[in-house]
Image (tube, rainbow, N blue to C red):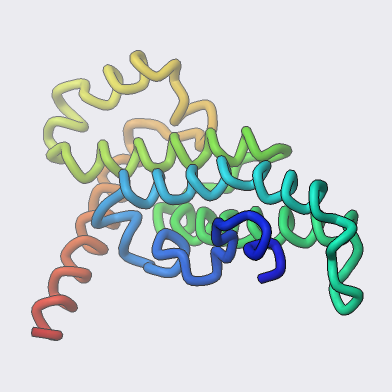
Length: 175
C-alpha cells in the first residue's frame, strides 16, 4: 500500500485477525475488541500521512481527498460488517453509528457483553443480579445501545458458549 512507504506502519486491515476470524469475538473477546480499537486509533494517523505526503501520491492512485475517503470507508466498513455479524449471531440490532467514536463505543460495549457472557454462568446472570450490577457499573450501556433486557441473556449465553465450543472442537479436529 502506498501509504505504508511513508508511515512505516501497515494500515492494511484486510488480513487483521480480529476481522477475519469468526470465532475470535467469542473465544477471546478482549483481543477482538482491542485489535479493532487499535485499528480505529490508527485511522487518524493514516489520514495524517495522506495529508503530509499528498504531493507524492502516484498518478495511478486516487487524489488526496479520494484516498482519505477510501481509507476511512474501507476501514470502518470492514469493522462495521464484522460487528454486524456478531450482533446478528446474538440476535441484536445494530445501533445507530454516526461517527468513529460511536463505532468504538459499540465495539467496547459488545466486547464487554461477550466477556460478561463468557465469564459468567447462566445462573449468576439470571439469578444473582450480575447483569444488573454490570449495567449499573457501566451506565446501562447494554440496554442503551442494544436494548438488551435480562430475558435476552440466556439465548445470548447459549450462542457465545456454542461458538466457543465449536472453535475448540475445530482445534481438536485439526490436531
